[in-house]
Amino acid sequence: MNEVPGEGTARDADLTQPVAAPLQPIPRATGWQLPGEMDPSWRSRPWPRRHWRPLLFLGLVAIVTVVLVGFFSSSLKTVNDLTAGSNGRITGVNEVTTTNGTTFSIYAAVGVGPAEGVELACSVVRPILARDGYSTARFVVLDRAGDVLATESTKCGPPTPSPNPVTLVPRPATAG
Image (cartoon, rainbow, N blue to C red):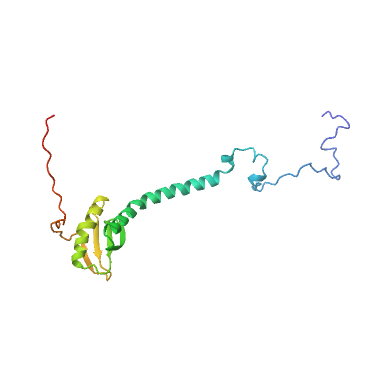
């Protein structure tokens, strides 16, 4: 090997002298990083790239909220309609959906007897459940003591005539 004197090689180095420290500390390979706010490139990134985690969280919360509202809105509408359509004779509704179908437990107000329970089932409960898509659902109308007043198998008689009947007069046929 042709070595030039005075240029210093690894063999010529004096290992007893301390080596000058580097200007910046050498980072340790611990896997830990500075928070994004301390990173010099943090402020130069666009806002959505800096805050993607909270945006993702808010998006997931919004999706879950929409799904839950959509899921419960139809049953809440049915419960509201049953309560409002009874003129205070229905005080509570409990809906249970299982693999066998949907069952409504409908609680009548104090003072509602068996005859009025049947009338309530025929004139209020069945039409509202059929309108809201629960025509095959089972239901039971209960009084406050828990006694059954009517069910989905209760026979309904002919409708009672209205005290103010409306007579429909056919229109005369017109040509063309």
